[in-house]
Length: 281
Ligand SMILES: NC(=O)c1ccc[n+]([C@@H]2O[C@H](COP(=O)([O-])OP(=O)(O)OC[C@H]3O[C@@H](n4cnc5c(N)ncnc54)[C@H](OP(=O)(O)O)[C@@H]3O)[C@@H](O)[C@H]2O)c1
Picture 1 (tube, helix red, strand yellow):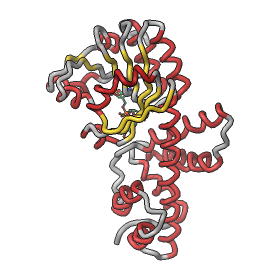
Picture 2 (picture 1 turned 90 degrees about the vertical axis):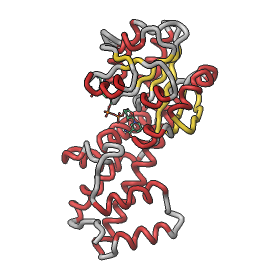
Picture 3 (picture 1 turned 45 degrees about the vertical axis):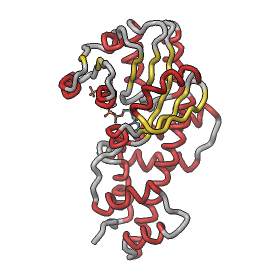
Picture 4 (picture 1 turned 30 degrees about the vertical axis):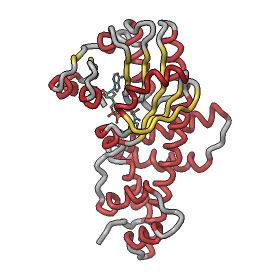
């Protein structure tokens, strides 16, 4: 995302907690700051993308957080997938400085980020969203305004709840068929000829069949998002019975040490339960 901003001609200052990871950006022309506060100083836009709610709180409200330097009129764009409640709290704090906050969650994985083809789900003031669009257009190809602060994240959590569940039930079906002796490729062909065909399963199947779980989106981050979706369900009084069970399947795979693999590695836990492997011959 940062490289795309540089390529588009923007003057960029970057901060990363592990400083060495900023080296390629320094070589590409970015200034490297030693703290979030230093990165945000004199900026027109501040873009954050870090792991979770605690990390966002650290880079915004922490001792060297951006709150110390973010100026009136600045737009802070947070693309991390975090709790909508924490995100609204950040919006409140930056508003105290006269700045604006957008929750701008993304989907599209690493290749979408590299190609500048992410999809953004944005929450915040609509006028602020319009002002941020020229920046967001460098980073993504689709920008969907969802409503006031927090609603971009609410949409993102619902999206990942759907995506994680689709993949998990696809894996359960593949394991069921494989145990009976149906070849995985045959099962995929059947699905692709039915209304159950989905871009997600078309994309993931070849990797699953090879046992290649190189992370496009790590299982531990999907698990985090399912926790956040369950929290949102609790806060909004929305029962999520299927998601509760699906989340525990991801929890089990994570407890087995599979958190750094792609979330499709959830199938390996199901395979172990059933005593069968879903692999192309
Ligand atoms: N990866 C995807 O495909 C994808 C897709 C959609 C949305 N997202 C969301 O985007 C966010 C980032 O994803 P990612 O894959 O880049 O995650 P990641 O590999 O965990 O990296 C996140 C970044 O957060 C930093 N960080 C973590 N804790 C911190 C703290 N306490 N203080 C300061 N910095 C901290 C890390 O710094 P260090 O380098 O020092 O560890 C790293 O730069 C997540 O919320 C994720 O759910 C990711």
